[in-house]
Length: 307
Image 1: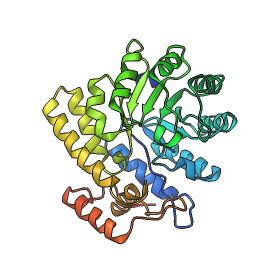
Image 2: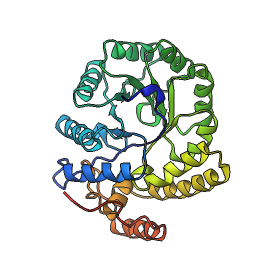
Image 3: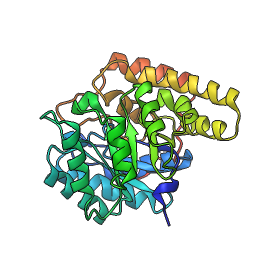
C-alpha cells in the first residue's frame, strides 16, 4: 500500500493532452503515463501548473485525473493538483480527486485576494479537516501572490495538517529555510518544483522533485536522483547540468506550457494544443526545439504509438 510519508524521487507534473477542440485526449494521456512509467518515475502529478489546472473546466479536470489513475494502474501513486480561489471549491476538488483514486492532493493557496499567514493557516486547517486524502501545500507565489512562510509550513506540518509541500518559488534560500524548519519531521515530504534545483535540494534533505521537464525526458531527471542516492556526485552533477540545458530550452519562447506540449508532440505522445486561449508554439520555435531534441536523442519514441 502506498505510504505518502515514504514518497521520494521524481514525480512528473504531467501536461494535460488536449485535442484541437479542447477536449481531453484520453489515448494521449495513456501514452504519456506509459512514457513516464517506462522512464522510471516514482509518482505522477495530474493537474499541476504544467497540467493547466487553472485553465481547464470541471469536466476536463475529472477526465484527466480518471485517465491518469487508470493508466498508472497502481504502479506509481497519483497526486492531484488543486488551484481554486475559495475553500468550498478547493474542498470539492479534493473530494473528487479522492473518489477518482488519487493518493493525495497538492493544493495551492487561494488566489486573487492577498491573504496573510493567519488566513493561510486557517485555509489549510479547514481543508484538511475530514479530508479523505492527505494534503500537500503548493508554494507558487508567482501565480498566487502568496508565500507560505517557513514558520507557517512548519506549524502546519507539525500538527499534521499537511503531509508535504512542493516549492516552485525558485528561491533556494526559501527552500533551505523550509528544510531547516521541518528537519525534525522526517515524515514530511518536501519537493522542489524546480528541475534545475533538484541536486542542491536533495543535498538539503529534499524528497525529490515534482517537475515539468520530466514530461519530455523522465529518465534524465530520474538519473540525477539515482546518482545522488548512489553517492555518485560526479554523475549527479553531470546529469543536473544536462537537465539545466533542457529546462532552459523548454522555457524559451511561447506561453507556458506550450513548449513542453510541443516537445511531447514531437515525440509522438500528444497533440500540441493548449487550453484556450494559449496558442501552440510557432513553427520557427518548434523547428529549433526539434533540432535540439533530436541532437539529444530525445525524439526516439519511448513507447509504441497506440490508442
